[in-house]
Picture 1 (cartoon, helix red, strand yellow):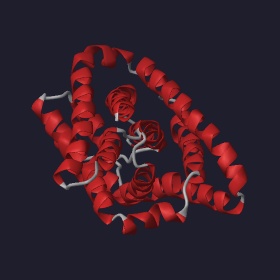
Picture 2 (cartoon, one colour):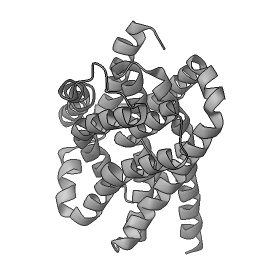
Picture 3 (cartoon, one colour):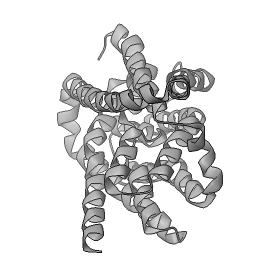
Picture 4 (cartoon, helix red, strand yellow):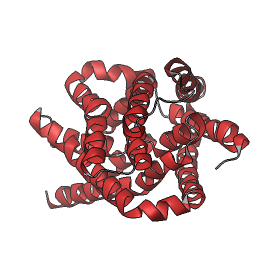
Length: 287
């Protein structure tokens, strides 16, 4: 993962391609829908954008995680969810409209919040100032990489709706395959560090996934949302876009070791979601 062309050009382009596919599944209504369901949306955004980073920080400090893992988990928690959460919500028969809206809005908001969380995390856990890291430049880069492709995908859907609907699933499949290949590449590149810190990575990632999923469900319970919305928030809070986290670690910060946490979580995040899907199907079949 040291190749400049791979990390600085190819990786951002492929992620932009994936997010273009995400844009093909979105409409303006997915953003404005939050106005019609403000309570569920606000609770979900608070869970994703505020409580999840706080949970990640608490876990990293509690287990005294190695610096690379602690920073990596914070980068992951600072990223938005992805289309994977939408697919899982569909399989679980959760509130798909809420899921899509949260993914869309969180992706835009994270352009501004993610750099702040990153700079705090690196300085706190490493004890050193972030070298050559500009919040403004990072935000602008995230806008180019995240927002622009999504906007182009939405425009394509608006102009050619039938083509967008037919091709969007292929982008989703490609996203999953690419993420798995990226995780494999990161794991091989940082295999020595991964083997040395595997127990720590396992404990931290497992804890984050399970607790984040439970936290999403509890937020819905505490705010008197429906069970369907609770299922949705459990999936949304527990499912992060590992690909974006890896991109930030490798391309923006040029620290592949920070990407280990996101790579491992890219596999672990399906654990809590799978349990929720199985639980949902069991409840629905018995009712």
